[in-house]
Image 1: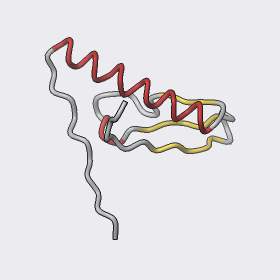
Image 2: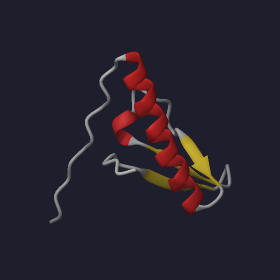
Image 3: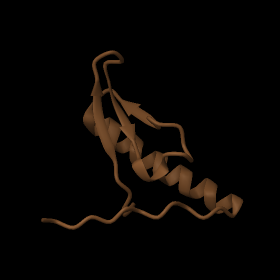
Image 4: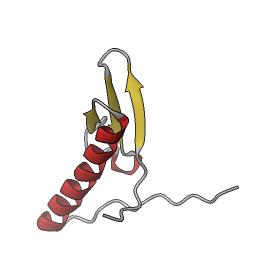
Length: 73
């Protein structure tokens, strides 16, 4: 998988989980969209979520969100 979407992973003390937000998917997918018990698991779940969303949008003929682009300072 070589997706170029942003992935925000934040620790939730209340949930005792790493919560995942995909900023480009806000408004199209409920956020946080997934979570993991470890940072690595949260990252893997984020990649799976991106793949599943793209597959669903393709199957329904929807155009996926454009990945954000940033430049190093």
